[in-house]
Image (cartoon, rainbow, N blue to C red; front, side, top):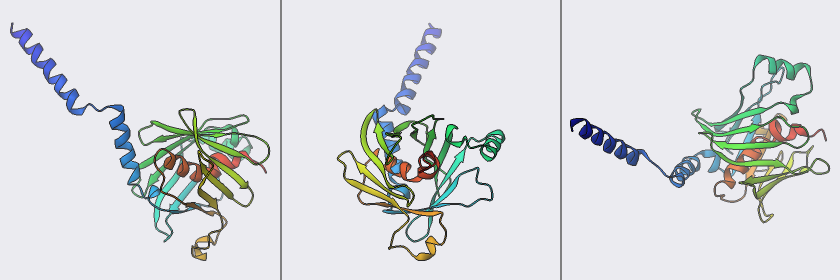
Length: 235
């Protein structure tokens, strides 16, 4: 009798703990969306991206600033072994290697995680949140002509990034209706010339307030152009 009583009490406590800490997928999504919405990455209309110069550029690293020059995020390539770094130096197979990026805020907390699997012709970038849950994908749509990438969630296209002028760093980012919601460029008259003293800087200009997951895919696409997207083209 005592054994059954203790067992029943234990089951009741377990159920109570599950109710206390249990969350539905919708609640979890809402919590992640709320956390991302507080990041300066999604609250600034202008992001200035600086690719830090290196003597031998084998590890991609960026800083992201607001229009006033305050650093609000970093983009770091992670998961590279010494062998992979050496391979990138002595060969030209970079585009066939898997790349992983972490976008962190100024405190070092991960906001977005990007993975571009090894590719042969067309590339795909998987965009995830800080906990590894997939938010969507950036999928290369063509190989020839002006390169474009679809922004997809669950196989459904919700936007695109189009290279209007690849060499001049002129990219339009559109929503599902083809309306431009952001632009990536090296020309932005609203910023001080000091922010463009090197060729490593480019600007992400976001025109509208974007909802999730489009906001995350737009930021991810803009911040991964050089590492995950632009290197795929030799135009």
